[in-house]
Length: 315
Image 1 (tube, rainbow, N blue to C red):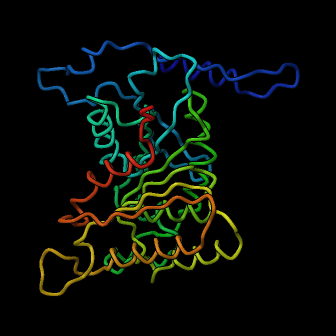
Image 2: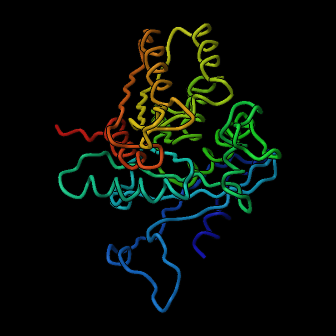
Image 3: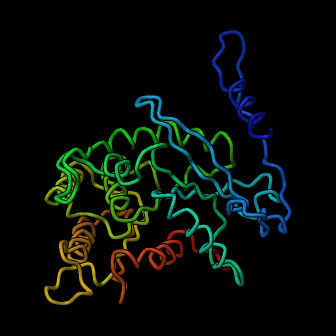
């Protein structure tokens, strides 16, 4: 009922009219007691991530329906005049609940992070998750050698436009966001998408957590995108945290290490290249996390990335 009312108010207040000037009205979500956030429906009902919201946000150009997941910080209701940083997380089925719980744990004692609004970016509704991310997170149609022959790649430009033109306005209209502190988190193909945005539309986000990026994709095509950016720009205004697991480079004969890609070497080369540009406004850090591989490293990288971008002011 509340969500339907909120949507109706948004539509009515954002329509254009030649006779009157209107403005968007933001309605606050109903208050939920802390006790309700720790309880679940029983009797065999599905587990829910309490205290979160799910919205359908269609892409008007492709007609695909996506969902965004939203989690508000505990301080949101008590600070009606405060506008919050926003962290957008790709691969939300996995990343959204993990980032949400990590951020809450970090602030469970002495506060280590600024409060922020967390937004999860889902796959296209009704599609296989890998098909959706192959298409939306990759910059060129070449594809990967292990992809099915009918797999579609290379539509990241369309997806980036969808984020900028549909998702950002949707979130900003409903929540008290600080649009100067929009941040991005992506892992693997999601990390590749983050680099793509950094070099093609860096103004979309002020901070990036780039996890185990698939720089190998299409014969390291992203390195060429970076060179083109560098040839046309004297600055890159962003804070960038990159992470990769130490076992993500190939080492024949050692089962702990990658079998196909040199992702550690690629990440180190990208960090060196960006540092060598001497962009005045770029803050970049790379961590190679010991004893981690491509499938194990994300939670640890998320934790360190949150601390890099959202460290609380202790003064």
